[in-house]
Length: 347
Image (cartoon, rainbow, N blue to C red; front, top):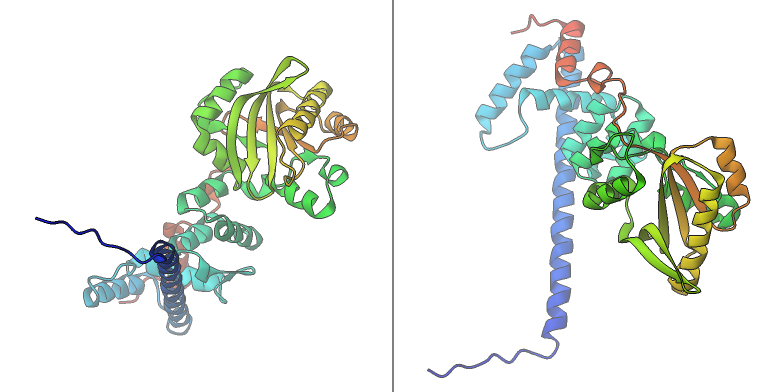
């Protein structure tokens, strides 16, 4: 049997690429529109429940009954459980304008919203995490991890000389990509771990490490070799930041900070700028991770350094903060609050 090959138009491949991009964009817009509709509906239903509780004395048992009736009427529809209805009510109560600060809740999936409502009590902190979740495209699990690690307190907290060594717009942006302290409790190492142990474990857990570093970090290599006048030098960890368009040199010290650490890192930054940095790259920055640091010693050391760098501590063992369930409203707590406010005697 004779086989014939199909001769495609010359511009077919380019058109197909464009068409795929348009379809992907359309699907994303449809998903965002559907999510916005869902959030609006949940907020309206929560507002209705809130209003009826205020005017008619509804309690938790009426919401349970409403949930059963709605699920019977719409058996294929998800999201009508009693717990979810109570979350809707809490959403309407806490965010009457459907906003977390300046961030619209419509841009977040519903269970991101539930996470923010139940795990962050302070309104400003909620707004911060909501904004970051949208900008960084965090999954719900990632959002939970960042909340539990108190990211809002650590972000931009590293001691740096960026204001003195970088132009104003870049200095502010660069400051925000560093944090203090860094949490490496996912490595399973004790406080007695040596530098090479930590380095090896970070590379083995590179996905978690990149998550802790933050958005934009791309891993280049470990023990990255540099040669200067016939001598070899090895950088602990080398990254490239895709948003800042610069290399980031990370040096690990399993001891307290010492001034000579900054001098060593300054040398590495100068070598990377001379040998690796592309003409259109921004200046290479350094991050010195130490077990502990004395702030004034670190400040003095940075004041005499030519290259932009930051100094931060790291923690290998999980800290023991106040348990979240002692200060944040669970669904059980919401039910109990409803009962206290309005009683549970309704039919």
